Image (cartoon, rainbow over all chains, first blue to last red; front, top):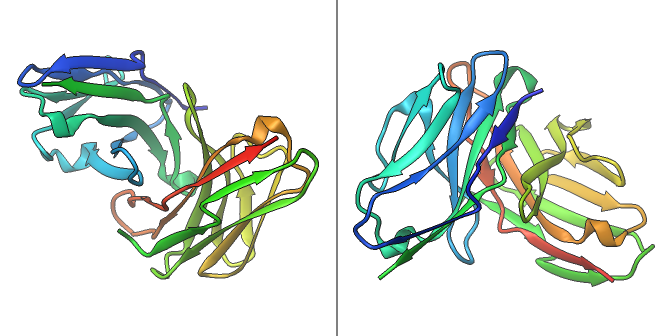
Length: 110
Length: 115
């Protein structure tokens, strides 16, 4: 069975500092990985997917199959980045069910 | 926001009572999911549906049942609520494609408290 681990429950950084959220996964097949974000009082929404190789709101994430990681990075954090972030792994053959990590709360201080 | 609503948005109920949560979508997506969100556990899949009357269990399905009699509605029922089912419940939808994995869109959530 697949598993997603986010080792940090809370990350507190100052505005303008870099931020990196760690995500490690275990899965025997070819993974499809995502980062979802939940801002205060808002619903969960997709931030990034690894297949797109895109940068959204200044965030990037690279899939490292050797290290089974999909860390999320932003070089200069902004106060509006304060939110809950979830790493998730999808298994397409199994109804596209998502397996989520435990989440990391990011707090960007002014 | 994708056309997904959940009702009720908040509910307080007593141990042992039945509870039904409703997820309604206007996107005509085939797949629907119920998750629960708990601190430290992230979101965990309870049940999902891949079409009308087609449902399957997720990783935390004990104590929950679901029904999907039409495309737009997916009901989650707690037959006899327990305090361990106090949580925030999220519904999600997705539409399969022939290419890449399809995105899931989430509802606003239902906060359930079992006293």
